[in-house]
Image (cartoon, rainbow, N blue to C red; front, side, top):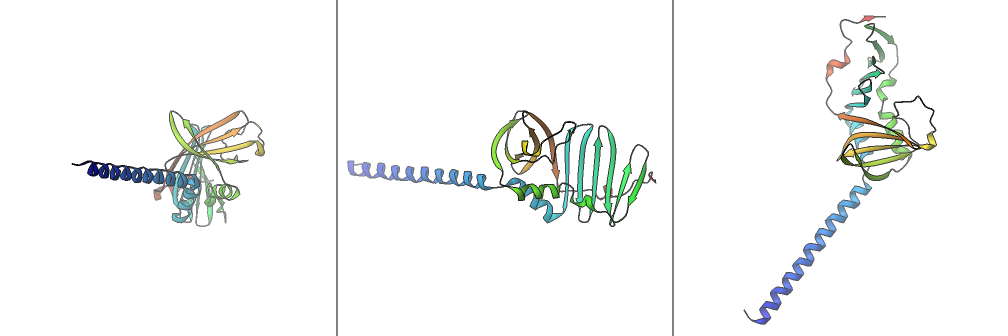
Length: 214
């Protein structure tokens, strides 16, 4: 191989390397820009409202948690508040309050406000502002978060008085999946775990047979 051929081959390799590096930089930059512009909370809300079939469990601890499940025009809001267990079932245009300590239920005619549980709060939040975005480690794993200012909708422990303007909420995502919500109140914060599913068992919308109307 003569000198000119070697120079040509080297030149081609250099050009190819430059092109490959350029493509890598372009792809990485494009992905970062898409990630920065993407609103994961809005995407989750859109998926919820489009399908209208979802279940969201929000948990502070075993004694304080609630699950909101919806399927079309029926819903189930299952709540544990300091160990006290109640459920609201929304169907047929009414709300049925189930009290597990007495195994009785009470009917509230023409009341379907529970259908908008959680989804209404999410809509108000994403419509109010563009979130601040970042990454943070939670329980040993790094998550992307979206933070909204002046939001306290998901605070579960409300024993202490709070000021809305001094309260922020961060939504932590693993990919597109919401995993945690942290409410930040000055130098204090409350972290709750979140589990979102888009499969709902129809049986949860039925009043248990061993319950009596109160």
